[in-house]
Image 1 (tube, rainbow, N blue to C red):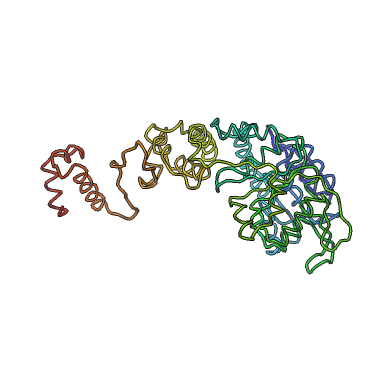
Image 2 (image 1 turned 90 degrees about the vertical axis):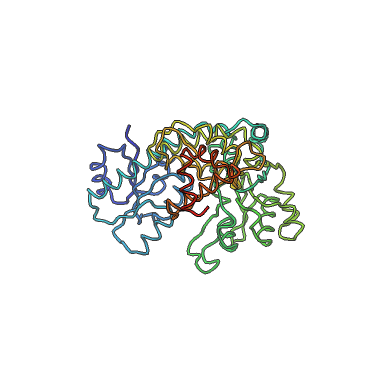
Length: 447
């Protein structure tokens, strides 16, 4: 089945020629203005866009921002007759997949679109795999069942939600599920990381500004809060927001009105606020780094996402999911994981939680040459396995990149001798070599 392609250019002749060129390989939609293009993009569920930098009603950067806010996974290729290095860098930083110049080389464009199409199809396979995640979080452990129950009860309310937990536990997945299952699901879901930008910039991004209100304010900007009107706004790492901006956020939460920087008029906004942090906000309050009144305002519903070590019952499902996901990404055919490898993963400490587990499985799928993931591709040190583990760590020695075969052999023989209390017969048997050979090696390595 052909993927849909939206071409946006204010020159009708270019639209016609590109549609003729690409019509055999894509389901092509065209538009010569921003408003119509945005409507087609949303209505048709388009993920692949060819966008001109200069449009009659504005510039392509602004439209690209709106497209990506609505659909972050969209692949957007920008084109222009006014190519500069500055524009190219700006386009890529703003989220463009590629930047090409006019007059367009048809062969180059076809190659580029084929590459983008393959990438898009891979995304679609992964999204299809993640379909069950859109309905539920992975796992059936009691903590996950409790989270699902809370979401079910509060999803259609306007209550502000505070999601807490260690890094890598999946806090944003919980936020996404709240929005996805709520009566706001067809409205915008916008996420902003409060630690990713200076507070002055964060304020203007959140509340918007009027043209000329400060240096660099060349046009009106309504701000993210108003863009999320009717939907959900996720404030990630809320603890990193400074006290002055916290007071402005508190005022918004109390009044549900937004005033742009440099404006005298407030605008009512209906948006659900979800906040995320991996910090203990009460300790932040006690230290004076977070406003107490804001804490109680955002902590109407508190969902604590447990660390992976407290939901080990979900490991099998998580491992299976990540194997399937990276089989698609890397075009591999790993069938599962050996019992020995699963025992190690079951007793691993997971300081990085589910995110760390995903990284471990991603690397293992990539490196594995067998049908099943085995211990040799996990790269987990015995020191990282819980002390109460049922796994005997005596079967493991540390081997480092750059060591010679003789260094590794010496280390292995010494370890085997120590493990067998210097009993040469047992040591030789455990190593699968003759006692004479062991005596020779002991002499060779001065053991």
